[in-house]
Amino acid sequence: MRYNDLTIVLPTLNEEANVGSLIEELSDSYNGVRIIVVDDGSTDGTRRVVDAMARMYKTVSLFDRRNAALGKGLTASVIDGIRRSKTDYVLVMDADFQHPYRHVGELYRKIRGNCDLAVAVRRKVEDWPVDRRIVSKLMIFFGYFVLFITGKELCNDIFSGYFCIRKKKFIETYEQSRRRFVLKGYKVLFDFLKCTKRDSLRIAEVPYTFTSRKHGESKVGISHGLHLIKSFFS
Image (cartoon, rainbow, N blue to C red; front, side):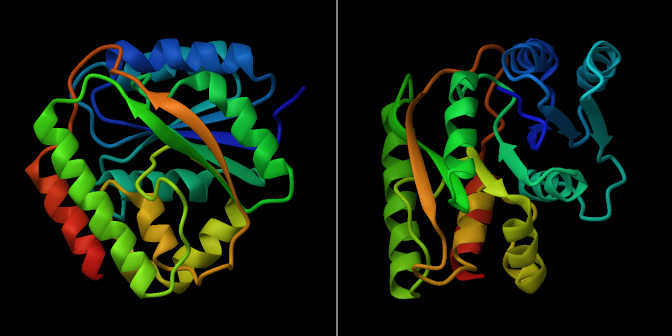
């Protein structure tokens, strides 16, 4: 099976230890897939690693966002990556191996099966401390409440960072509601869903286990939580 009409967007920030191995696994596993690494100002060797991988794999490219017009932020990085893609379908995933790459093919088959959005849904989360689990559950509850009372589209993991979508659908939604996307935030799927109407999307889901990152530390901090709260009200 070939994946010529699929682009994988990998937003990165200091992922030197992970991104090269992930690019190799994705390129070798999914014949013809295109990969755009969208780097948000890494201070380690991330861009150097990606440049080396791009010389090995012609379908790999780097977008350096140090001077990007949209400014810093994970959501801004994802939007820039999707806009730069040239395929009908785009898949977004983390570059730290917390999103198992073996599900890419399943998400792609779902999106090719006449749906608009295929979401990887976390059924199990490994190695999270109790306090993070509690905060996450509270945020999820409030996020579902916001979407429900405003009549927006729902899925079983509204904060998933691992999803496949028709590029045209995402761009249309973003262009119509760009002020509602919190660019410095990190839950771009939630921002997308809150800009839709109930039953306006054909959604498929793929369950997976959210694993520990392979190398490095999480970048999620208090500021990300504040941006998520801002997203609830934007």
